[in-house]
Image (cartoon, rainbow, N blue to C red; front, top):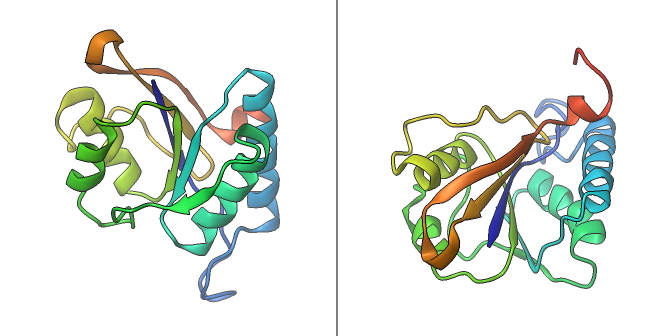
Length: 160
C-alpha cells in the first residue's frame, strides 16, 4: 500500500486573499504534477484534505486525474498545520487502499518522519508547496519506506 503525502500547491498571500486559495502558478504546478503522476501510473482509491481551501483545491485537481470518480473528503482526523499527528498515524495502520493526503507544514513533514523513522522530529523529506512523497508499506505489514519524492520544479526545469 502507498500513502501519497502532498503539501498543497502554492497559495495566494493572506493579505491578497485571507482564504488563501491556490495562486495561478500554484494551480498550474498541481496540474503538471497530477499529469506527470498519472503518466507514471500513480492512482489512488481515496483522497483526503485538511479542509483549508488551498488543500481542498489541490486535492480536487489531483483527484480529477489520479482518482477519477473518487470522493474527495475532508480528513476525519485533524491535519491542519499544527495538529498532532497521532490520530492520523494510528488510522493509516488500518488502511488497505492507496491514499492521497493533502495537507500543510509542519504536519506533513512530521507524518512522513513518524512513518519512516518512528520519530516525528527526524526530518526525512523537505516539502515545498506542491511536493509529493510516496510512502510505501512493506509486505505483511512491514515498515514504511520512501519510495520516491518529487517537487514541482523538477517538472519545469532546473534551477527553480
